[in-house]
Image (cartoon, rainbow, N blue to C red; front, side, top):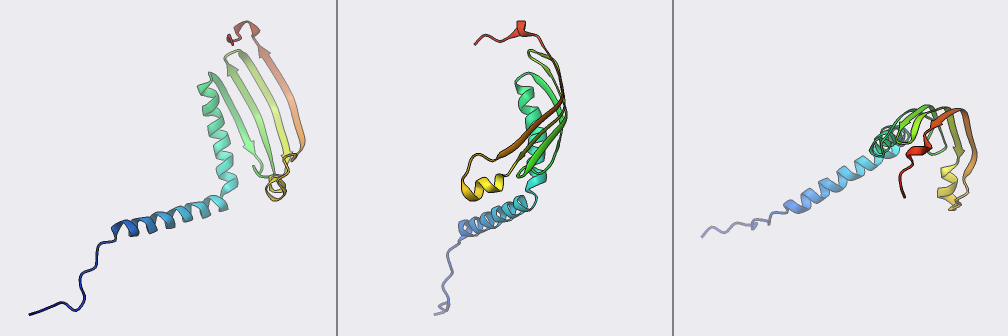
Length: 129
């Protein structure tokens, strides 16, 4: 009678897929950590415009700076809803997000600057509350 020396092992397909999922997630986290500044700038540039569009406002801007240290929005143009036309030459916020992460302090903004603002609003079209 031929008896195999090693019995067949059970299939561990779910463990293999779990390991692959964990390795893939770890790799994505490392890439997001390395490229966090461009990713966050892209989220602000695209996500902000899409969010404003859902509220009925056309919004366009250029994003610059490090999202974790300071951020600069330039050539901001908005229109729609009760805003006939609004332009901002430059909006700058200087802050230190690393200090908030290290110390837990929430008072991290050191400077806010708004330059070349022009806004025309029609207050007759205020939505009812």
